[in-house]
Image (cartoon, rainbow, N blue to C red; front, side):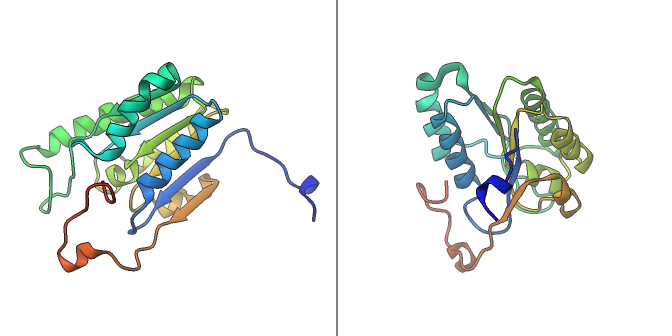
Length: 189
């Protein structure tokens, strides 16, 4: 088989999921690649509300790319009913923030204005019940034909895998969190 036997797609759906580290890092790398090709990119953040390195980086490069880079930070922090959750944030507040962030992501993905829309941590929002699998499916299926979509976070619904073009499972082999060490600034966030 030669390269002439292969076709290209106008756009793709990319998923970075799994228990391992690197999902957001891969999405930021994809953003850099897209911007380097003079694409218009929307980076929509669903969970991380606190200051993390990628937010500072995007804020700092925003003036360089202007309208070619939309950044929306819509999450209220970690959410896990009965487990580690953002302090002082109710389930209803988490759901409202997820709904507003989804609205921003859906509009960006269906508008035809962006070549790439990254929905960072959207899979977590779905797995945690802040958004529905039906909403995630609609985002994938109703996106503009020329808009690629990147969906990150743990627990991407297996039943939606036939709708995506590239799916990478970030498998954890070892992580120091299991030995009761917190995340390291510059490495984990």
